[in-house]
Amino acid sequence: MTIGNVAPKKERKSRKSVTIVDDKAPLLPKRQEEDVGFDEFNGASFTGAVFNLSTTIVGAGIMALPATMKALGLGLGIAMIIFMAFLTDASIQFLLRFSRAGKSGSYGGLMGNAFGKYGKFLLQLSVIINNIGVLIVYMIIIGDVLSGTSSSGDHHAGVLEGWFGEHWWNGRTFVLSVTTLCIFAPLACFKRIDSLRYTSALSVALAVVFLVITVGISIMKLISGGVMMPRFLPDVTDLTSFFELFTVVPVLVTAYICHYNVHSIDNELEDPTQINTVVRTSLALCSSVYIMTSFFGFLLFGDATLDDVLANFDTNLGIPYGSLLNDAVRVSYAAHLMLVFPVVFFPLRLNLDGLLFPSSRPLVRDNCRFALISIGLITLIFLGANFIPSIWDAFQFTGATAAVCLGFIFPAAITLRDKHYIATKKDKFLAVFMIVLAVFSNLMAIYSDAYALIKKNTSPRD
Image (cartoon, rainbow, N blue to C red; front, side, top):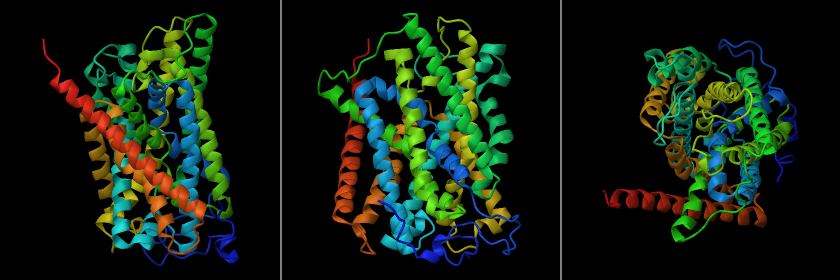
């Protein structure tokens, strides 16, 4: 599924002279002549695009993947990670091919082209729900790491509490307030996603640091006999435990959602023919990180693995410098999420503006509107992070609703609509498979969650 021959040849050479003329075009100008306050921009590099897309993918989802291994077992869990990567690539290829055919410069424009204003509305609403949920998860994890968490019933101390003891200034609300004002707000002020390429590169490096340390700890524990090989297959004893397997699907879906940023990255590429390679390189990189993190995280903690595996790194590892390694793991990934935040925030702000002000001038030209939307969204995310107790709760909601629409249902629906008559029988079969799998899996996940909640509330109290 490639897009190499869909667009006219003259459009494939460069996008430096493309002018924005309608609401389907990208938000950001490509011409230096357009007087909107930008420096000359000749297009994003391949490396910068890979970093930005990889950063979009490897967010908080990686922290919940070891918990999916606990539910699925290593064999089925790793197989599902690989399967989701291939399915994600197929869905992105659908988006790119139909965007070229319809000359759409955004996901919203593509949905509008296929289904009219209601299709575009649904896309924008889904991006808003998904990205707000994901960014709330980021803040929850950062709060868990720095200030500790008690969401699992037992208190897990944060890094600052471990270093300095319990004080008002290392409490969750204060720490998240400082992080928001000093890190999130400044990084959210960039108006072009390529401006984040250096922070994205650093965030990927920090994720690798987290992975390397986790692998090293696991190997040391394995050699010393401190861990045992975990289950290879899921532990299914009855119908209820079978249905519980489906609760991991929203988490796996959320782990790969990057579709809302593909067009922004594609629009800024100096050589737009590289977008397929950018997507597949990013997916290969992220899948490798996911598999290694899931395997070694579950190997290290086994059935004691928490929903947010970072919270496990406050225990005695039983190895030299264990406390130092615990802190290095947690701090490196908390810093990674701080740098991922603006990359996910970028399309959130863009789609909310498109939903609220569809006829206004481009957001990049209206500093007042840009500031008000940014402040409102950051405030909402901050409040959500202080009132939602667990990342699993947030993942279940976003993954079972908006994320599955963005990742599979919308791309499949565009393919089945086939307004430009370019879909093959194979494409349509795959599109039907995506929709059936997405709907069935998420209905089972919602049913399992609801059943577990009802059972918990109706259990006898002694």
